[in-house]
Length: 269
Image (cartoon, rainbow, N blue to C red):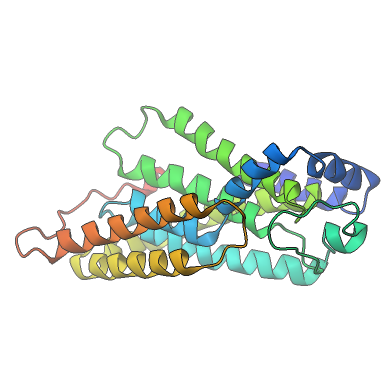
């Protein structure tokens, strides 16, 4: 995974400032309105709120989900901030202007395009979700390739959407994808040696995770996303978080239903 992430980051850096970067952006961004309608929904999946809620919901008491979510957030935040501060790459709207760029949703025109944060989050989340499923499923191998293709396909859709809505260059999403894969890989290696999952699967920790799920879902549902027509998806993701948190809290608050010990399989990541 380190090789793939390095190649993606290098490709993004090499493409930055090249005429091909602009040509590809204009071609993708000039798509029909039906494509833009799909893009605003896909771009929502690159939100940190969505990825964290899905990672927590997929983990049903093993502790792997919360452990990877915490580590992914920490590493991803560092990579995003360092990249944006060091490169200071202007966004398409700042360079090409409103006459050329079709903006869907909130206009973004600052000098913080590289790497794409939504793309980083989507690819980090996709790989982490796959690892969580493999490490907590009774049948960790069956269906694994299909699931990996699905989550990576959705992450690629998020990358495309960031160009379609006018927020990022192709170079930004390439670097974002590479940073996302790197983030998830580092998070898994860190967890393999740190084993936060052992603590987070305990009953009290699971109750705290449940309260965190409910709080994140509540904040997510209260946000004005500035993305037209995405209220249904926003409500759906929020409902997943609220339901997962409520079920986790109810299950671990029962005196006779303390979380059963779960086999630690994080080494399989």
